[in-house]
Length: 265
Image 1 (cartoon, rainbow, N blue to C red):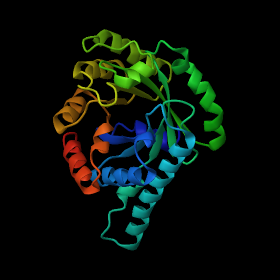
Image 2: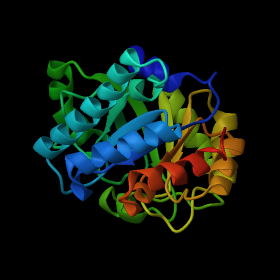
Image 3: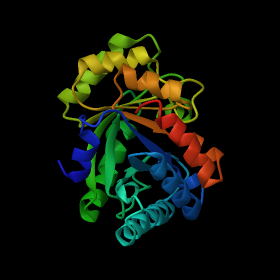
Image 4: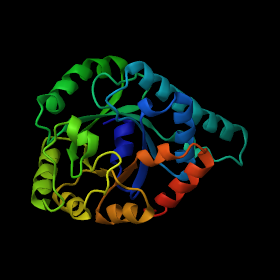
């Protein structure tokens, strides 16, 4: 496992927060500003991807813009001891919908299987298409089992997922065990982008008692209470996405994310 994988799989740091930046929904410049706001608020990682209607050029431009912005913070800190440079050192990781949304500039990629998809494309097809690019570009892959729960949203529809109901704890337990037995480094419970409600904490608890790999939870988490509930249930990472797109003012976004992150720290 490489540096990014070790960072993502470190369970000694407590529950951490990351944001998802969708290149299809914003310009690279706006994405960079939002990523900086998240980093200053205390986010520990920037994920880039998520949409079905983007391409490599857009993804690449977005990642380059974000990394340049973060590097500028690190440089500024090296020139001024009063500036905290830690926020500029967080990884920028691909979170792709498929093989058409990759970039060699990323620090790593969540190389995932949509475990409850009924479409071979998301079980193994996109992975086979993308693997040669990841290898040639030297992007560090971090293997991940990805499970979509109700309500599922667009992710569930596009991925043709057999959604996990809020009370199907035994089913989640089985998937979590399978994810670890298959050698995945991470296990992701997803409620869907912009979900009306987050993953049931009971499902997170079921996954936590059934596997030892880090658990990521995303979708529908919009306030400190929801973030805290997921963290207390056993989530190692809390992911938010849509909330970042609701604020054009970076300082306002930073304040909102700081408040949310306060629920898990």
